[in-house]
Every structure is written in structure tokens, then in C-alpha cells.
Image (cartoon, rainbow, N blue to C red):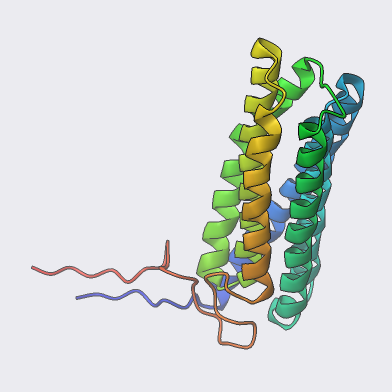
Length: 229
């Protein structure tokens, strides 16, 4: 019976820290481009969903920026609690805004037009965001970073919003169903609020900031390996 240590050593922690920094940088760069395209396309098509998606991208930038700030320190653990609070606030901000936009759309204050750039952007984000989320969550769990895991959930939420946006824009373009997007977006807002609550209270499947660094939940790449013959 051979067991692999659950807690990564200093060399492995350095690798994981660099990986998280790179993933966060990639997330920020992509979301800045995504926000610019979505806000421009949304304004041209009078699409509240596209504008909301662009603002969500800026919220994701804020969340990833908080993690980047944390991991810029020599000892990222010391900034864990503050970073968790910042990520939680970004979840709440997203939930509030998406709810407001969804209700406004349902009340019929705007009728969005067809947007080819919006459809293409939503489809691309649906491919890119799951990869970034999975990679950061895996590294965060192995490193024992609650903030990296929480930010990966923010990125995953952006994946859901991409799917909602794609479905809403497609149904609007094909059938004129203006209500499809805001109804689905309200579900996403509820999920965002729930994740914000969990992050604020530290229920992120990772140890609290003051605990010894250990992998979050069931370890992924550092799980104990054993063989029963």
C-alpha cells in the first residue's frame, strides 16, 4: 500500500501558485475583450442581455483581480479572507444586476434585435470559460486556496450566463421569444446569490484562511493512491 502525501511540498506549491497567476491573468485578459465586444454589440442591438453579459465580464475581472492581488503577495494565505470577501461582493453585484435587467426585460422596456456578434461571442465563451474554470479549480483545490476555488466558480457562472445568452439570443432571433433570456437569467442570478453567500461565510470546499494549507474537498491530482490485492 503506497500513499501519496495530500499536502503539496514547497516546490509543488510554487508551481501551483504560478499556474493560478497565469490562469487569473488569462481570465482577466479574456473578460476585458469579452466585455468590450458584448457592451458594443449590446448597444447596437439594444440588447439588455448582451449589455448585462458585458457587465458580468467586468465583475469577473474584479473577482480575478482580487485573486491576482492575493497571489502577488509573498504569503498569499495572509490575504485569503479579504479576497474571499471581495469575490463574495462580486457575486452579489452580479446577482443584483442580472435580476434588475431580467425584470426590466420582462416588463417590455426593451426589444432586442438580432446580433450576430453576440451569438458568436456567447458560443466562444461557452467553449473557453469551462476550460479556465476547471483548470483554476483543480489547481486551487490541490493548493488548498479557497479564493482560487471561489473565483473558479465565478468563471463557471460566466459559462452558465454564456449558455443563457446564446439560448436567449437564438430564440429571440428565430422565434421572437423575448422572455426566454430573462427567465433563464433569473435562475442564474439566484445561483450567483447562493454562491456569494457561501463564499462570504467561507463555505467554499476549502479550509478557512487560518487553517493549515490542505487540498480542498476530495483532492484531485494529489489523492492518496492505494492498491488492495
